[in-house]
Image (tube, rainbow, N blue to C red; front, side):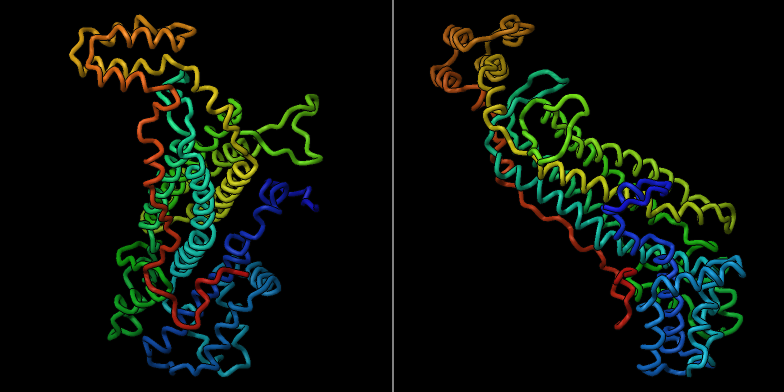
Length: 480
């Protein structure tokens, strides 16, 4: 397998084979393509929907020519834009000139003045980034989390009744089931995915240099530019933001990044628990021929996938934290500090995907050792101190907690006979005594199995309810 040994970041080097397909969203070429898409769709909109004086309704073949510029956009085109940028020292202006070049010697050349009409660069940028992140969430982030949820859910269902020793404060506690502990993560992830979906569609604006439509109304004063802008933004599958400065304030991005950060924390919690369960022997990891766990200890099979998930989530969340806090702040009507920060959105989200893949891979390698899981519960008779105490309370006996504390607290071994003798001496109803005698540590799981059985899976797989891009537009097709 080839690696770029000169890459600065592991995303482009060591881990490139795992996440390089994300370049269709987050590479420089992808950003340029999204900018071309927005510029061209705005031009089509001005001609066919706004019907500005000086333009004509575009013919289907003309629209096809225009959309082919971004639909067939490739690395050669990206290099040409960068060559233009070397002269302009302005990345968005370079895109405008690039599109102008593409229209030369075509019937559309006479309309080239309407490319980037009344736009500030941030009109193009905010819509480009919003489409980029929207596409990533729809096709990568949410499906990947949904896949992890499905894997955890399958484990939960299979082992819904497998009794497992709980640990609170790291110490033995009332029994649960392996399935119940897995379904907890399913529910948490599903709820947070729903919150992420509620952040969409992302907001967008196209209202000029400082958000007041100055140039729009100076040139075409009779047009309803607010209504037209709203229509265009929603055609791209985004939500119109009427009130902005030169930049869209990125509050929508902040909400998305904060939600993803919470999703990551749940995956982190899951990864750490799995790491611990493997250490307890509850899960046995499948051995792959040729792999080495330790350079000196041949027996080792390390839980490296969950460790990788944990480490990469830390990097992702650090970046997401900065993105969500920084992007909401801009001096006066505009400063450029958000521009360089936004270029790291792809880095943060790529680390997320890398983490999810590690967690899924780690879970796929694990097999449950049912005997090991049951074995830890089977002889833990001190765990019945809780139900015995509650039955004593029910029967109005004095000092039940203190009596059970004296019997069990700090004792290394509480045997079945000790517990049975204690129950036998209790002055409680015969029915309650019978119920206690029927209990074993393995049976004392409450309704853990039913809680798993009752759970209905319903991962949010689609969140774009802000309308579709115009017919024939590839706004939702990524850059590939």
